[in-house]
Image (cartoon, helix red, strand yellow):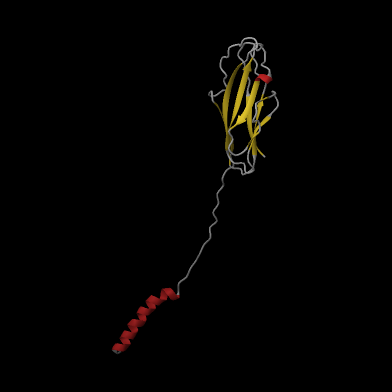
Length: 177
């Protein structure tokens, strides 16, 4: 075997080592499905400016022909990831009533809403509200984006308002549409 044949054999072996992976390369692919579940959330938080309750505090009886008044703001925040509209309602269960059963007339307990950034306030001007009748306070935008607004309660005391500790409850509800 001559030198040329030996060099040719070595060169052929080297080329086969280099060329083999290229000539016989294989590819394999796999597809994997990716999934995620985002749980639906529709949450309402209610925070009176006076703490855990809407507390008007002690109000002195006004003189004849006068009215004493107090206001309390309540911050309401809605978180929604449902991508559909919602509204917020309130229901006062009964009039402001004392332990003797005397009630403050509903015309003296007023409500107005303010400060929404996305949706529509439904009570922009002060109104009195009737116990047992729900009132829509706020309606979201068409996409149901999260928002916050304020409900302001105004209590007026006249000389005819009876003395006592008055209370009631308000039920706030957020409902997707």
